[in-house]
Image (cartoon, rainbow, N blue to C red; front, side, top):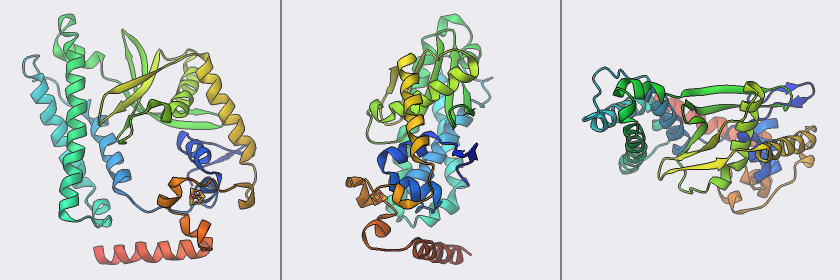
Length: 290
Ligand code: SF4
């Protein structure tokens, strides 16, 4: 179960809040009925990229030198991606991609990883005069995939990276999206700032997104941002007390064209039928794999 009820209300996450804002009916199907959604390359890839960037910092840095650091880091990142790609071969096979699509997605993902690694390498190079490469690498190694939870505000989330350096505290998330507008992620980042403040008693200095197809973008962290998160969480808690789907109105938008629940919203398919169809489709794939 992805959501929990605490003291009569659900514990939300940045994704459940985002889903509710997009469409309350989608929230109902996703988090109350807990209907599964189709596997997608974007989900599988997101998971792989997160693992690569998480494990990147566990590498042995003994052989790193300032002169050869960039190619060395690139080699490690590439090896980590290849390993993750192999580890996820069952999930990838389920997507039934053509060979051409598989190659295209792999190359695209590699490009993102390379882009991020080069930027990281340039960032580390800036501190070349402050210590050995090993020391600088260690100073800039963030805490990764940290779970934060607030009973008070009924929310929890996993923060991809918490960078605590002499320059301050920075909370960062990765995105593989084509769109690189940080405003699309303001609420998620505001929730992270709120969670961080509640746990550590102070605000982080910065928060932002590593857009893996581009460059990092940041938001200013202040009390206003935290209040924005609190307001939105209060609103969602007040609107998600019911388990009745009529309390979750449809919000029509272009996203309906790609929504897994489209046939229930527009073709009268029942929840039971959705579950049955999904199971049959999933079982067929499982049998073929065996
Ligand atoms: S198809 Fe549209 S209205 Fe229905 S759940 Fe999905 S986004 Fe909401």
